Length: 253
Image 1 (cartoon, rainbow, N blue to C red):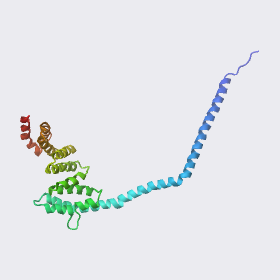
Image 2 (cartoon, rainbow, N blue to C red):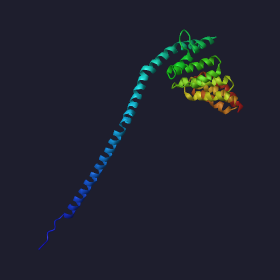
Image 3 (cartoon, helix red, strand yellow):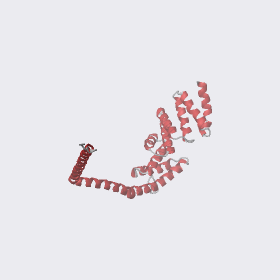
């Protein structure tokens, strides 16, 4: 008598075993998730006061910062700009006037009930007005021939305005040159012409750097600066001055 063999019997057993195994693995995963969730809940319950305090501290910090910007800093900035106007007015007149020392002192120390640059720097630290006052104070001292103070204030000046940045570095170079510190003057002239590539400050400080390089017997370096002026800034005032200097240095070599 023929015996009937049920096809797929072993496969069915295997599938059942695999199914049980998958169910077991899934159960373990959920058990672990339940355990982790329980531990997290316990942690939160245990430290909830600290967590709430921390979140509250962050929120308070942000709100305090926004309040400071809106109710303290911005009004202070507007007030500083208002004060700066009178000081800058004295400075602008002084620049265009002979025998202007008294005007520079008014710009620095104030007049007509308004602050001068020094007051603005002291009372409105961190504002844009204070930054501009720092630059103008340095330039005032430079014109008053107080070169140490000019260097002090101009060296503190920092601005995203590349033109003012170049002018401040160049003015420090001028101050160092006036007190005979030529190496320092050269360093700042280089910083000045590197700060901005434009037809006003770049040839101006390239020329001054070239003159000091020449004094320091760095003839080739001086010649390269002068030729750069001639090539890149032919319309600049300094370009009209370099031909004689270039001829002299080329003949020297």
